[in-house]
Image (cartoon, rainbow, N blue to C red; front, side, top):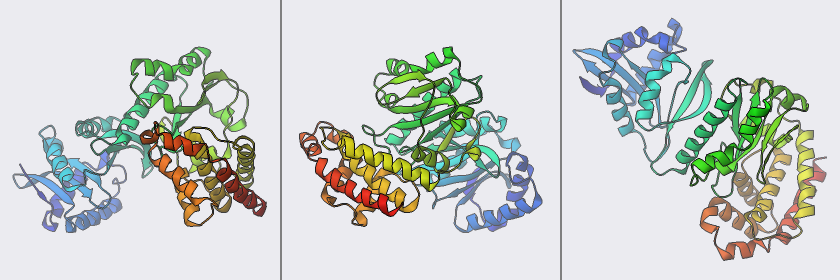
Length: 410
């Protein structure tokens, strides 16, 4: 067998293979879509981003990849040539042409789809990690990511996958949908500062026995893996979809910074809802986001005002904590939300505030950004925490700006 880049002269045999296996590729069932795919293949051939394996002048396997998007786009192997190393030959060549210093992406079938068994095993053999559940061409798929060597993101995703497996196992008869939102999906997670925000919505009420298993799950997992830095970072609520939407009382499992408990309600503010609707990722179960509504500006305004009042009350003095720097970032994000009606990452909001000269003490906000970007490097730094104790006045002056924005936005 010989591996080579596809050329236009190969197109008929290439498409003959694709046509034979098209039922395994949602979106290619109709001739019109096959014709469109043919045009796509020719474009990829022109960019030397189409490779194939040939045997006896026939095409045994094909692959499209994108250097620009650093991803594998399409893989197909002739049924007669499977389990003969064709897919591995194509993977080796594609990865040699992509940037291994960045994330390499591919989407494939989900774990409960019989068509996913072979491709998922192949990608996992090459070190790809299962990621978000997605839909492509109205078909349920899953994103896989090959992370650069030593990437923090890889270890985080492995912890997320383990946590999802544990939660979904406990709630297997409750039909859970598990989402992640917040800093992790906004590319703003910083180990040592950030939380891993999850929301679990079930079709049926969580039983008391299940709730007891879930409420201490973080500690159970830490006991099994005491050196894992992520399990303690998980925060969020677990309750029925009906209670979440209607705000009815329910049996709720709550994980927070200060502890965990079984309770009867779960407060989810408009910032969280905006992130859930606009940027969250589905990790398990059915996607129910279509029944959710993006918060109104009135709801966002009310939560910004509550946050402003909290800053005025509790940030009159600051202690030796990273959370002192967090007030500065929170104010920047509140101002951004008032001006745009949108939610962005705290780091992005702080950078936006600096660029727009909104902070009366820009050096304090820049310092907060430095701490935000590398908290683990500063966790034992005396100078950092000495500075944190001086932030009360800069925070209150920045809150003056937020107050003016609130008045202008009424």
